[in-house]
Amino acid sequence: MCIAIYKPEDKVIDRETLERCYNSNPDGAGYMFHKNDKLYIRKGFFAFNSFWNSYKRDQKKECVIHFRIKTHGQINKDNCHPYMVNDKFAFVHNGIISGYNDPSKSDTWLFNEDVIQPFVNKWGNLGLFEDPVKKLIESRIGYSKLIFMDNEGNTRIFNEDKGNWDDGVWYSNGSYRKPTPLPPTPTIVPTYNKYYDYSQSWQYKKQKMAEGELVSLSWGHYDQDTKRSYARNSIWEIVKVNRDYTVDLMSDDGDVAEFLYNIKFSSIELYEEADPVGSYEPIGGWTYDKL
Image 1: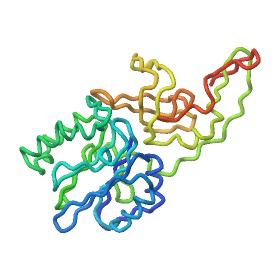
Image 2: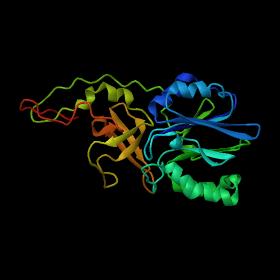
Image 3: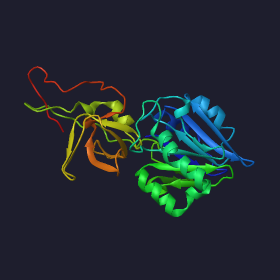
Image 4: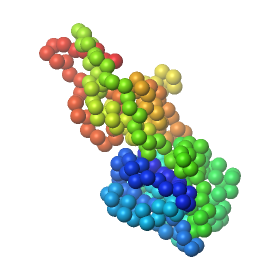
């Protein structure tokens, strides 16, 4: 679900961390900084080396950085972040803002046109930072996070508490971190008339399940705690990877954020990635244990 980063002046993020962010969110990168009362935006990078060759010249400046993974809108420069509010004010977004769905424009683009630009045009850039206005916007965007910056370096993080600070840098989710090693795959003994969970042997899933990754439900899910059903192929963000081959998920595609806990690897697919094994099928008349 993308990652947004706020980096204060003179803080340096190492190349390895930024490349990890790009690889997890490869649908377009961008960043912004201010200098001499001007706001500069660099975006539309679709290869990490292109991003790095530009960014490394500005890496000691106060910067806001964004790596996108597509949820709404096309993959192109226009849908990359940051988004201009006006020529002195811009922002980046991590998450999904409900109520906006256009085949060509991202939800961020539409939210900017519908809410941010009309407000700023009437009340000014810094009017957006007033506490009551900030609270209203945070309540509207749910679990999403926004980072604004103007030409003078006035910067605000909306829903700051939903991200985390690490060594003086703010990240909107944990996809910048090195993946935590999972325990060895347990030995599974097949038994008669049950199903074997092939996902436990899918090494690529073990490696790629990380905070911030987008996944879809492999089939419908009924949650005993909330007494609600969730549709197959609905999109969720991983907010925690557990050591028992399960994940905790968050969806922000409604009025409020929703969470699912302890969902097995076998019940989800990495967003827009094909299932490398296929559906469960009996083998030679036998079926196997499903964990």
